[in-house]
Length: 256
Image (cartoon, rainbow, N blue to C red):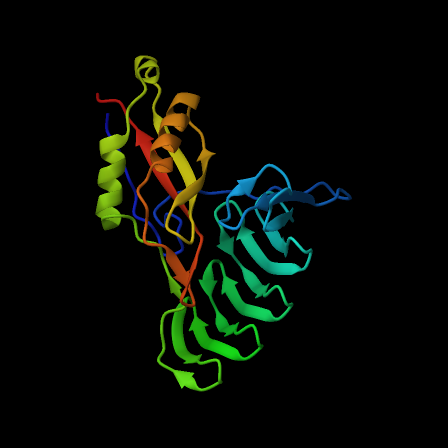
């Protein structure tokens, strides 16, 4: 069996993944489709509202464009994020998040996934914590502030999770642990399985989902290996560990 792996992009999804989606417009007069999902404190999906830390309501404007609104268990707003392509997590437009006390937590704007304009982050007290300016995804200015409002040394707002051993370690782990299901091999089934997952704030991998299926046997094997990935160094947002979405394509190809 040959195994293929593509390079991870800076947003957590695979920049080299050649996925394309054609938006399908809703039927005139129909209500927008809304997907409601409940999550625990580590952003793992739950089957119901019981024990949920927050809920997500994704309203689709067409087959890929959507607005995701999340709410705390108390019912208060948690965040609003606009997507040009929700399935690929390509943000487009203004996004905001709030603390449980209702105070604005952060505000940013993106154009097809790239930061554009001003990014602001606040303390729960309402005092400015960070201000950055972006042009086509590139930062042009940046400043950080302490709880007292005084400037402090600048540090990166977003730090991506790092797999054990880096990307080389990730590739080696998947390659060494994946098996080609015998039944699928005998039936000459092959293809590319896209598996998404979340690296939580402690570095553990969870919420593993097959986003692009090839065959149940190949899907299950790809998901099994991803589910067992060793602990990562967690990603951080504004110095605080946060869950981050990732996806990897696993290619099953028979030797010729």
